[in-house]
Length: 397
Image (cartoon, rainbow, N blue to C red):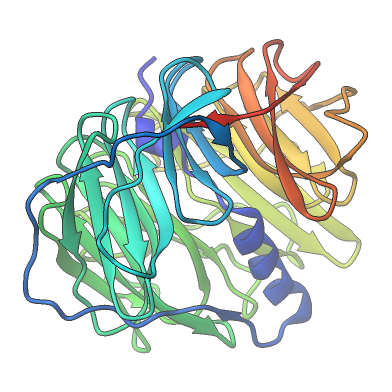
């Protein structure tokens, strides 16, 4: 069954997951950073060639996005380098776009396949989207024009149709965002939606209330935006049928009436089947529940909650998935879409204090980024579905 590449990568990061859950637990103010963006009138620039590579050297990988067992992308822990591999995750080529800027930081990214991807580059005065169609050999740049903030998410469903969330910062359970849409592969962007204090449950703009975790589109029209709110026990979950211009609230049947709810972006596998990771927090503790849809996201059915706070969730199909639990420091797997979970006994390494990202591409092949030592990151690989792991020493040239 075909799975939309960009949506398989949809996940909430450790940092954002804990920020959102902290907001729910404390029921108090929280802040997500926002940076001012450029107002440059130029929309796109000539293609920029990636600099010539040098000798191999060790790298610390912060995030990994494998397409299959051999091909993939990653970013380094200093947020300065984009890496590309064609022979597995041990050896990489530095394909960072030559931005020409003295100071910059790599932000969010999305990779459609082994050749095409989009990376956001930003600093205190601008945000730009860099696009490659040949594995990072050449990049083109498009500045993102907005009134201030930073790009929180970029997501493409094919070579042309994409969206990004532009955030102006979140505080006190209010999160102002703009939703942009591209119909030409990121060469131009149109603001299609923004948050409003007048938004309600009827179709229209998005509410300012609630921390937005991310959006997912299954085609050029149908989309979902997930989040969390400390002001309600209802699910913060909105859907659009016009490419992101208008939104209406979509209800979920929750197992408890007293739980605070944090929803991760939906993940689609083909046109009909999807999963929706939902984190529930009650006075007795946190639980992860996977909601499933088999009717293109029109309705969602819950499964069996698993206790603990989920740091990351990785699914390769509507049935096969993994999650890492924060408090129990444990890795779990499901083969029936979250109805039943089994704990994997394997320990990555005695030095591991936690996992920040899981990235599986098949039922057996996967990678994990783990925290080791003095808050440093290490890359691990499994070829048996997480039963055993091998520590890698990634090199880049």
